[in-house]
Image (cartoon, rainbow, N blue to C red):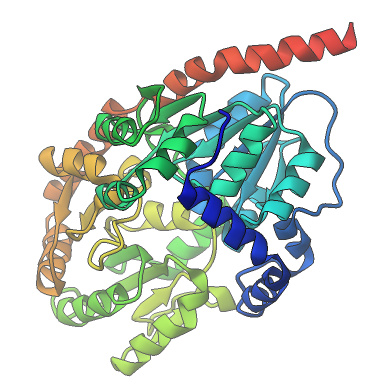
Amino acid sequence: MSGRLPVALQTYRLLSAAATPVAPLFLAERKRRGKEHAERIGERRGLTTMARPRGGLVWVHGASVGELASVLPLIERIAAREVNVLVTTGTVTSGGVAEQRLPAGAIHQFAPLDVPLYVRRFLAHWRPDLALFVESDLWPNRIVEASRRGVPMIMVNGRLSDNSFQRWRKLPAAIGDLLGRFDLCLARTLADAQRLSALGAPRIVAAGDLKLDVPAPPYDDGKLAALRQAIGNRPLIAAASTHEGEEGAMIAAHQRLRANFPGLLTIIAPRHPERGPAVADLVHAAGLRAALRSRGEMPNATTDVYVADTMGELGLLFRLAPVVFVGGSLVRHGGQNPIEPAKLGAVILHGPHVWNFAEIYAALDAAHGAERVDDTGRLTAGLGAMLAQPAARKAVADAARATVDGLSGALERTLNAIEPYLMQLRLGRRAGHA
């Protein structure tokens, strides 16, 4: 795409360039708050100590843990084709997941801030031959600068909520310019494809949701056995990926249920592990006893609430708990991913605010593979009913697993769509060795 940028994009690029002198101060403040990796903060300014590997390079960018997890199988399949893969993310927790789960040979870097100088540095060093942007992380400078270098760009697992759609409609020229620079947009759903098309994306395929093809999250056998021994035969409920305001609801549910379920243990895994101590404070304020996993503590006979404030251990939680409330849904966040607990046989309860995964939750609810709970009272009733009725619990869990299995297939469709680009890289690599 050539020609003059729309006024909104010109303004954004001027303002982001003008922010260059203060960007280090911004990063320093984020580092102070634990939101940046201290030893690797230069990567956020487009600097790196790593050399670019020889040959073709596919750049995969996902904003945070959820986006990275959704494309891990895709990254593995690309790397298996003997193509170099560079993965960028923007959060400390996603960096930890990348370290644990990226295939051998794949490179992780923290994404540069969307400042023109930093983005140009990044692109000049890594010289990607293909860029895959996950979901809807549409930072203008990254897209414009990559386009100007002639890098083919594909949106994978493209997602555009109705709220984002309405916001972008106020800047039609800007979003039309950005989307028009993509060679291809692979949308999660038909609704996402229709919204992207309405905003100006010229080439769109509804390929399905890659999250549905992600394997169940990994776990450590020894850690699982240790937790099972510590918990014993106590009745157990859990909340995964909770946000502020939801832990209080789980604590209140625990207080109401423990009379009917003696020895009840509640596990709460906050979406942001650094909130663990604050969650423990809520437990103590309710007159209950808490233990924090981040401190190496294990639940004992006196523990009421076990705060699982660690990273990358939801695979343990979903294998332990028969009933799980999936967070981000009682508060107006849009809901967290229900696919992993569904694959591992946990009954899913969720609140009304699930627009991030609207189609999946709708399919689960329609198949009676999940239950919507709109407030603390209904959350309590739902948890209690599932604890008390093993047969009903199994029926719900089986329906959830069957629903998720039936919606899979996005990985193969995505690979088929990008295969011509990967073939071009492989042909170029062979020509370079000829």
